Length: 300
Image (tube, rainbow, N blue to C red; front, side, top):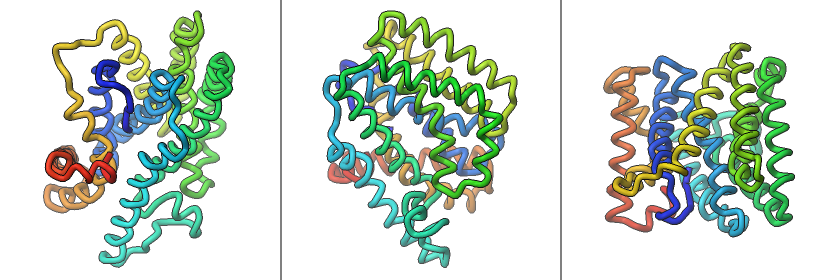
């Protein structure tokens, strides 16, 4: 959820999309209506994370140690925070699974994303070192489209998978599409190929009406594709929303605390509670960023 690029390179439309996606994740965990719509927030981040890493950092990949500093240190810190909350509230410290899968899944249902995306980005950076953008593009695009077209076959398997592997498998198709979009400008016909094949695959997926897959995948992937492409040719310099978008990592990490508070105060499963939780988390992160800069190490 952290887009590590220079200020001058930032696509402000993608920055706006990060904010919308973060709100969607908060609403999803607040159990609001329109489940598949708000769940597309997660799909957006699954596409964006590898896309940005490849597009902006192809020649300057981050080492595993750098990625661990950005992703795994906050993950470990917040795993401890939620473990403590679980103990205080008489819930199991590890939410589900045996010790290994329980740790990977995390002490809160949203923490699985960070070790997953760490593995993805570390693997992608290994591929970058081979300097074969054509291989990265075609392999990720082909496999990603194949998974989109066969979602009705593999999605039922997730019901029998233990966390976090169910979440990880569900995350693979949008992640692969994000990798392909990130690499598409490395090939002369890459953008044209992406703009034809991916929407066609998503139309097919939409007609399949796979619960928990069709709607969030279509909305999430198409939103990123449109705003990424449009933002390259229209990247406004008169407005900058980085000050807000850079709060999204901290919102993601801390929002479950606020969701619990406002679901109890304002009613479980309402957009009012979700909005209050989002604003409270963003305000907390903003204050800590400003007055306690060291907090960025744990909040992004």
